[in-house]
Structure formats: C-alpha cells, structure tokens
Image (cartoon, rainbow, N blue to C red):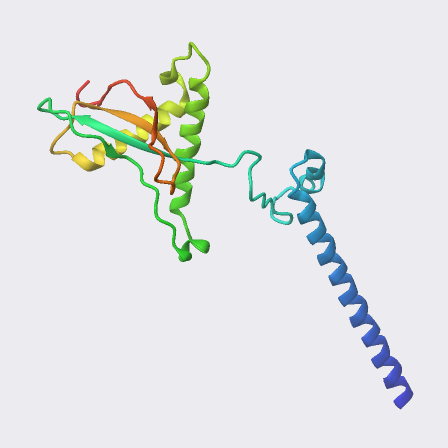
Length: 193
C-alpha cells in the first residue's frame, strides 16, 4: 500500500512539474512575442496581428520614430458684444506632471488630442495652396476653442466671435521663445452670425 502512495505521489509531482514547465514555457513565449512586437520593423508585427483583440500581445512602443520635442499651446482672443478685443488667453493648458499620474491620468488624452490636431494642421500648412479651414483638424480645433469661449462667457454675454492661435514651445526649456505657427481667421459665433 505504501508503494502505491509513493507512485501516486510521484505521478502527482511529475504532473505538477509538467504543468509548471508548460506554464513557464507559455509565459516565456508570451514575453518573447511581446518583446518582438515592440520592434519598429514591420516584420515583427506578424505575431501581434494574430491577436485579434489586441489584449494578449500589447503594443508598448515607448518611443516614436521621431519623438516630439515641443508642446503646442492653443490661445484665443475674443471680440466681445460691445466690440472690445480681449487679450490672448490659453484655451488649453498642459497639466504639470505628478507621481499619481503614473497610475491615473485621464486628462492626458485631451492634451494628446490637441497635440495631434495641431501637428496635423502644421503638416497641412507645409502644402501650399490648401485652405486649412476646410480640413477636419481645423474644424475640430475651432469647435474646441468655441466651446471654451462659450464656457467662459456663458449665456449672459454672447461674444461676436473669436480668433485662435497655435504656438509651439519647447516645453520645460524656458530659454527659447515660442513659435507662433498658425493664426486662424476671425470666427463669428453662431449668435452673432
């Protein structure tokens, strides 16, 4: 009887060892596929394309081929109902970074969206002869600034319109002055039009 227990215990030990080995092999294969999927060459993307959900093999490419070296700031000025033009003020602001943002940072998506829209507008500016006001990136930014203006003035004082400006700045490097890269035409608000 004791011999059967020893054999049963040995079989269970072998099964545990085989399961552990299989688990470790699977984790090693997943880690290898994840690591290979981060390579910038497109031939390494084949493994990640097999994951239809995009959940099993993540895409953690931390650095773009050409990482951003500046921030975009969007400013606006308003033509009030009485005809006064206000000073430039920021429509967007870049939130100072905090340690808690390593875990939770939902406002980063808004900053990233503004950055992407401004980047697209700047790229379109390099193509001569285009009317930028016809492109979706312009309309998205215009509507965003209009919403900011409406929120700051409320229903009691409807401004006639506004104008917005895209400024490119090096971020934390305060030595360089910002570049003013795009100035929108005057945009009449719906109430004034």
